[in-house]
Image (cartoon, rainbow, N blue to C red; front, side, top):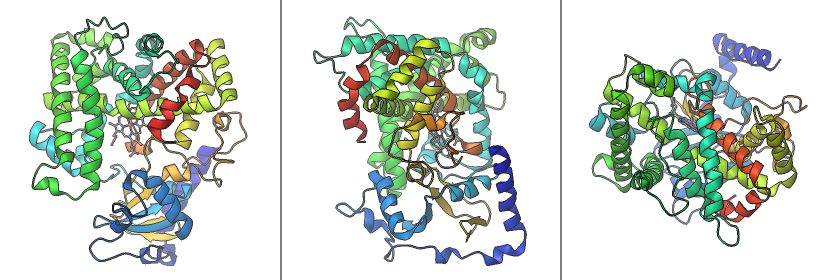
Length: 472
Ligand code: HEM
């Protein structure tokens, strides 16, 4: 039924563009906007001490949208962009993104990787270059491949439960939860890529003879620096082109660390016979056997898969623990499901979806239009940057009844809730959708299952730390 609706809508959009109704669309100049100034545009709204903060963009968009409506224009850093909080607009944008969807490039990352490694990977680029690398990460979306890591992920989650037990203080509080969760996600993704099991959680008895210890600390630092460097170089002026800014240096140091560690393990893996990798690590096998990649490409894709999985997955676990802790009834239902039958876990999966609806890890899924496109009755010209603000859309009462209430039931198949398919897109959409989605979901669900089963009140004890960390 829903699928039929998608197809009808897609046809509708192309029809509008195809026939002359295009003339009836409003112009981009008619889209509401705020007062702006020459050169700085709307940047003044985000200056230090000004009304909004770039770090809290969701709040800014909510506020501006309340004044101007569901679609408005901003000019930031010299770039004109269209912001929308309407799920139909999101649908119109994504349904017209074409074979090579364009996301704003990360020029600093692109430059650094091209100069130093001769290979850029999936995240920063666009067009045919992006497509080439994208093929390398596509196997991650295969259900069988993800399932082949399930047992390992369960073992790591078991270790994490034991680790929590050993690291709680006398008040039964686990402090600095996020760092501990990062250790879990590093360990869980490491068995997929680079295919070497980093033992991050084995130091719980302070008798650690684990030879990875320094690597683990370096990886945590690199993961944090990478995200920070990406943010700084993307949002700031491109001064990195002239000298190495803080943001650029963070990209550099994080890459050096991850490159060194991943390369070491890839070389070990390369010595193994292909049949051995095939049975032990399906993802690395698919990467190694792909003849269109040279060594640097394989290394870059392995680094990207490794880095891509750490921060967002840990944040999602933290957010879900937070909501479960605050919603005892939901927590009880999730726990009884885990105890009865821990195979498919539809309710626990719905909890993760609901957490990502209320608090997605990224605010917007942006695209650059590849052709003139009708968005909300406006003719948006080719090459315009559009930001559908999913974090605002997914918290609107138009799309979710009582959006401030944590209600995983709305995601269950037999619920009567008719969720707009573009109202909550925590993993993006289409050809550029997050390739790590299934791996991340498995890591998250397996950990929550293990924690729920053994620890009745554990998540309640985690509340304060998690709330502080993510600021919900
Ligand atoms: C809960 C955890 C995660 C969330 C919420 C998340 C979210 C996202 C989002 C929103 C995008 C942009 C999609 C778009 O533009 O349509 C993305 C892209 C990406 N993610 Fe994830 N992600 C998560 C975990 C992972 C993991 C575990 C990996 C690696 C295994 C990964 C690797 C990537 C890569 C390589 C891209 C770039 C894809 C492309 O440009 O084609 N992510 N992710």
